[in-house]
Image (cartoon, rainbow, N blue to C red; front, side, top):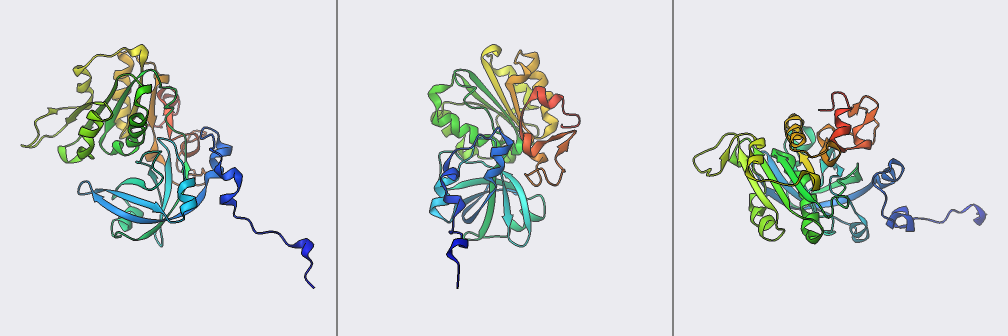
Length: 305
């Protein structure tokens, strides 16, 4: 006869009360409880360039869809069944619970397989993981956003955040540099960022074609186009690590303290949980302690950039 004393009632931990509490993403112990899996359907695929596409994912379960939250600058682990996982920065608005936007470059085994999928395909995500840009800390100040190439992917989340809370910030500028005009991704949103979100935009390319009418050169040349009060300014820098030294050094010369410059080392991400050690710099796991760091901390991480 079955003894009911030893029957454990069924539980759906994802729907228990603690699961709805917004975790403190700056604390490792709370970050790790966000390691949940979500089944998603690819609802749309938007070509951005020859090697970059924007994938719109929708979490299948409506309760989980509403429950999923993240902060600007965080990333998730995207699984393509049969091919493995890859860390991807979240490119959508934190207020959008209907879709998750991922800007992805074809670069490896998993992303190449993803590029072969079609609308309606099923994938899985885990997360979110990592630290985030301190958007509340920047309130009441100027925000200078400096982007190189695919760095626009993690920068879109803070751009959306500022657009949703525009009255909390002073002057906001986006400096966007790329190798050529085709790499200025999301150009169809430039006008909206300027007119709707009141973000002043400055663009530049290294190699211009006949259609390009803007500036040509390195992204640091854009700093000549405006002035700002360094004491009242925060900076967010996203892009290839090689640009951090030049951009942040330039910002330092202009008077912005290094602890007010925030960079994303999202390109160092691998497993997202500190298990594979491939993102380890000294004693620091960039997937757990980052990917967002202030530049002063980055300078003290040997070989971080």
